[in-house]
Image (cartoon, rainbow, N blue to C red; front, side):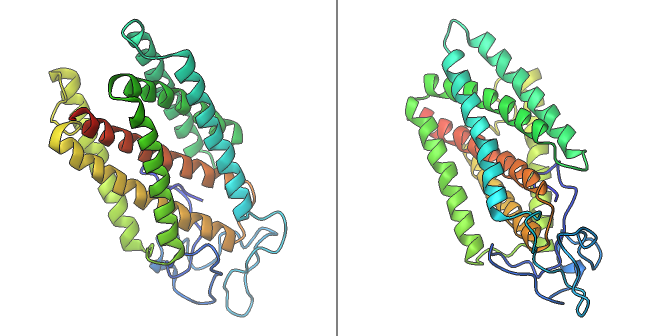
Length: 294
């Protein structure tokens, strides 16, 4: 399974026609591999393992029949563990590292350090051929420290309600995309995947350029993180996060339908966690701009 996030996209296993729906089963001969961005040839890449054998008549994958295959429950459980780690460490860092005028430098230093460590763990996992629960949970723990400090700063300097609004907004985006996905209002195709990834690369590059200008020129650089442009790019970032969620849901569906091994559920949890963190940060930044202008 490959992550839908911009720099962690490596693996996949789909041959279906790109329609959404967790309850959908693979259709025999429904489409060629070229119609799906996650395809690898014309065969199920898990057909050689005991959990997913090809259909001898049509060459289509069978739904997993053994307990060793990944299920939706596995994904939900691993995602709950990963997100729970993020929330726990975020709450602890908020309580132990409250951001105020007396320790703002120390708190921000710890937050930046935690973010860098989380990025390193994420990169290590992205280049591993198999999921490592320890690395994924370590990523979640350090990511939580970063989020806790940032959320504490926003609560202190913008308003205590901003963080809760960002949490509720993230939950609403998740629920909305899941509903649209299950109702098949969203169709994940090669074109959709290509557009999302191209837009994500462009977005990240613009933010990096803006960061460089802000570091060397001071202020907000090119203005992509404040004012009217900040609001616009905040909305774009949230929309991109919603698109990442659709790709994540598609990968979970494919993993279940093609009988991926149970350990692949950790990769699904990893991708979902990264996407939700993305959405939360963009939501928090957008609401900070809006509430700061009041």
